Length: 137
Image 1 (spheres, helix red, strand yellow):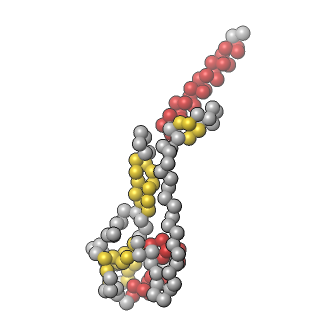
Image 2 (cartoon, helix red, strand yellow):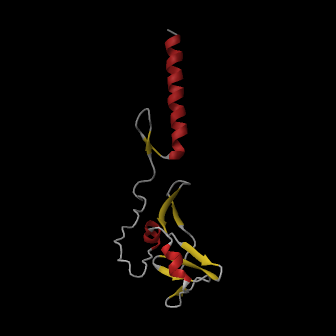
Image 3 (cartoon, rainbow, N blue to C red):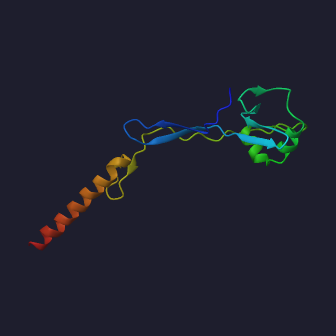
């Protein structure tokens, strides 16, 4: 895997103009005055140019990494030297099941988001006709 600064990945919901978040690839940027920044993503360390670094980490890197919270380190997959590996539970990916339909509050019909306003207006017109018809009696 190479460094990707694109953190959020989306997929278009078929038949709509909506986008669904499918996965997240977080990264952390660490730097100090005496060197170029380094990036951590997926448990790997990358240089500013995006090349994976193996053994050439500067001395300041682990000092800066230790300042991060455990939650952030787990999110980017970084384990400090001497730290026991933490069992990571990946963040659940947003559900890709279904097509984004929601129930109408009035009749319960399942509607795509783009259909909801027109459907609600149809209910309002029908209610207005019933009121008119009741007034004509």
